[in-house]
Amino acid sequence: MMNNYMKLTAFARHDKLLTLLFFLLSNAWTAAQKIQDFTFAHLGKADGLHSQRIYSICETGDGALWWSSKEDIERYNGVRLRHYPMGSARTYSHSGGRFFKLATCQQAMGGMEGTLMAFDNKGGIFVYHETTDDFCLLADIAELMGSEVLVNNLLATENGCWLAMREGVWFLEADGKKLTPVVKDCFANAVVKTKDGVLLCTKDGVLSYRLGEDSTPKPNMRLQMLLPDNVLCGYYDEKYGRVWLGGYECGLSILSLADGRMVASRCDLPEGVAQNPIRCFCPYDDRTMLIGIDGVGLLTAGRQPNASGGLFGQPALRCQRGAPRRASRQRHLHDLA
Image (cartoon, rainbow, N blue to C red; front, side, top):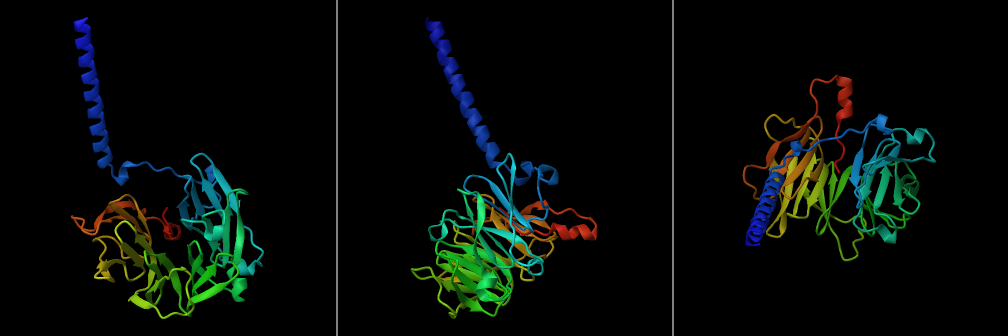
């Protein structure tokens, strides 16, 4: 009986040791994971993809991936593709060059059902409804303004949508019926939500707009210029309180709060990386930011303000070199999930 007890005790200790060893090895493997350790799957027309030119991509709370193209939107849940054709009541000439992008908001706008939105560069604003599983038109900006428009970016909030357009920055209220001019007569590329307000990224520079309690902008306010650069895209890193900004000729800049004001830092890209337009930012984990650069691919950078070893890491993914010139036009980055 005693021998059996000793054997069981030894087995239990041995089992606990194996469990602890497995746990330590698992944690070490997780900590050692690099981006190149992951495998990538390709979805093409053979899988049901309608278009291989993608303009934006996002992930919803259920884990599904959504992306947009020139004429439609698609959803992938890991098993199958769902296609959403986005028709238009416009004449063919007015729809020329039309393409779609996606936007999400943390809370449903104006008490609406969904937090996923779509918009086209011609001014159509759509909201996704889960119950009917389709996109419904919220507003036609060209119709509201009485002329053709060019919409570059949309920031969806609980109270409405900030629109970055060729005609400036405008605010569309949640009911889709009223437009308010925030900044007119400037070419706006993007609107970035921050802790205390929004940043308006235009060809003439980056403007700061501090929001009041109602979070609804007032028309034609005088705004503070933070940077004189032509900034194309931006990302507010809430975890570290920094704003990442990228553009055409200006490269990468990071805004951080110091002594109660925003301070800009210029960041030179690593040697050997082309100074091409920066298109998008996406956090990979708590320490790593992915930067999408036209013709280069994805570059990794440290998210932490005081990270040792320099800001940039090795490129995570590179675009293929030596491809025909015609094919290179199809390798422009637009967005990251």
